[in-house]
Amino acid sequence: MAAAVTPPPRAVRPPGRRRTGGPPRRLPYLLIAPAGLLMLGFIAYPVLSVFYYSLQDYNPTKPWRNGFAGLGNFTELFTEDPQFWGTLGFSLKWVAVEVTLQLLFGLALALIVNQTFVGRAVGRALVFSPWAVSGVLTSAIWVLLYNSQTGLTRYLADAGIGSYGTSWLSDTATVFPAAIVADLWRGVPFFAILILADLQSIPKDLYEAAEVDGAGRVRQFLHITLPHLRDAIVLSTLLRAVWEFNNVDLLYTLTGGGPAGETTTLPLYIARTSVDAHDFGYASALTTVAFVVLLFCSTVYLRLSRFGGENR
Picture 1: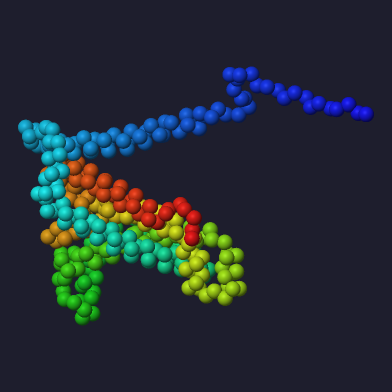
Picture 2 (picture 1 turned 45 degrees about the vertical axis):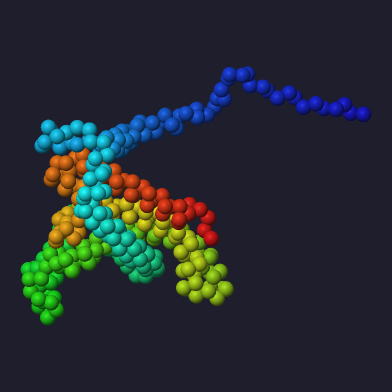
């Protein structure tokens, strides 16, 4: 009868001895620590400074009035400043209209340039090129296009549409649509780029199987394309909403907040309060409220959209 074979004893690592042969677990954190500290310094310090100055009366041109104000700036903001509510309402209106239109046009453009056609590379370059233009340059382009002497209104008047000398940017009835169109030209490519990148990751087998089952293009779009694009749409709309809420360069250059304050957003009001009036304490209180509004809306939006969850 053969003797039972006992397995050799396992080597026991002495206590207190670390595993060798690989990088230490802390190495990745040590490598990103310098960049993390720099980001923390450039982000945390300005944010904390704004919170601090929001509780102060701080105006460099009137140093004798500087000092601790407590909640005085916020009390004045909510109870005595009608311009705050007007600019906040316009900011929300601006974000809702802009983001909705940019999403719809960007989705349509992404679906078009995702198809195979002659000159697709050139078409994609033309579609995406406005996104490479800065906000100030975009404003300068559209200011020239809206010029009453040399712009679109002059050529429309030559064609018998409208009258000479009409300025869409100085008329309260047309300034909002004119500003919307100018920002659409630059904002639509952002959605088109992100949605196109996600469109190219959808497996073609899904569309082939849907065709075999008799699904038309509308049903394929509703049941295949849109569910796969959900996270990309949620993320792009959130980012664009934050950027549009903080939009200063385009409206400042295009309309200056006018006419009669019709296009003054909350960030533009903050810029005027701080830079022009030098009232940095009150401007910091306005900025704090804007931060809270954005944080609340972003949190609610992500919760309602279930960003990152499973598609249903």
